[in-house]
Figure 1 (cartoon, chains in turn green, purple):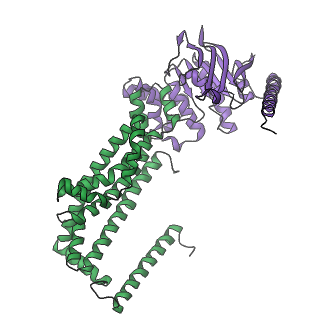
Figure 2 (cartoon, one colour):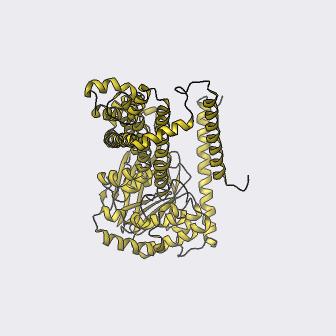
Figure 3 (cartoon, one colour):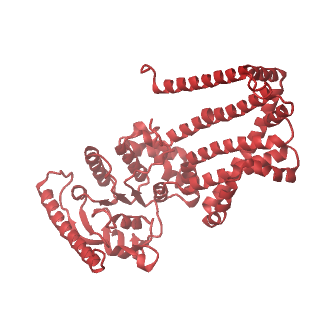
Length: 259
Length: 268
């Protein structure tokens, strides 16, 4: 085993666990303890997904969901950033509002559904509203804490180098807070994805979440399991292979991690 | 003509009366233009606080502080502060770090870059202008910080234990470089340190501060030619003299505090 690097061993163990679970699943499905409509075999899940893919329904569902995700994520991040900036600049506002922000942060996105449906009725806007309500608050508090926790020696150095109030904010506080902001965006993305799925379960249209509900209504368990896997995989891949990478890049550039 | 003058500076921290700790007590001081002065004292004696007041980063509680007849009301490019932690901006390249103050002054990008390059060359770091601070050693970072301050042609350099975190060899080299830079330009240097040897190597005048609350306890004129060598006989004598001067003043204070605490019943 020593010939493999630590990294390679980690991947091998993961692959083994994954393979083991697949085999277990296949075995349980083949024993017939549960009927096919409760526990389909891995093969039939794959077959259903391939079929949906070939019909084009899966692709269009994914595209619709991603479009909503991008709109909701962008709006939530921008709004959260702006509000967070205001709170960082005016500590009186921060003291007054931050407890409410924290409370709003702990509300699960599903809870916003009835409210969004009543305000915006079934439709695109209700789903976007759920994303906003689910993802904005976290961005607010990361932005505020990022801006407030800038190393005071940077501020001192900048002030003796003649920085004005505006450039103290623009040229020192903002760039110094970038690592925090990237982490904020990463969380905002994860929250947006969850909120979107919650919103799509009830809302209209034909996103991934709605396809999941359609699978339930049709009694198509293969489709349900396939979509759930897809939702998990999308979240995992975008977080691990996109946002983590960006975050590491920024951290290295900002000197928080070695070469 | 003096560069800096302090009159009856007091400073204390803590808002409520009973929590107040006096950091500086009645400091009077005049520093000549072009002079190299060190503030020498143990940690916690208020020397850094005094430097921050001179930099304009903190206001004195009582008393007046002037820079060439003008009262100091805030930080300014005339008086640049160099800290122990180089405090380079990690998101900017070395060159853009050095440009920071020039751009703040409204200089054009190209002009600022040219001047910054010349300054980096002066401290021997023009080859790393595109590197980021974390890619440099501690000594190099401190030299970039020096260049970032010097490029503004400040009249006064305020230095807060700038070499304390460096290894011995690097420190000696930077001390020599600092003396060269000082002799080459007409600038006043106020240098804070807790090392007696460093103060003797560098300055024309040593102000010994005692702590709790901070005050200037003694003053030494060091009339030795530059460049000075650490092994110099006269310097060793002076070092011993200052040491003997510093030690009893400390133990006296400690004794006093001990007595006070005993009287307060804390030690029973």
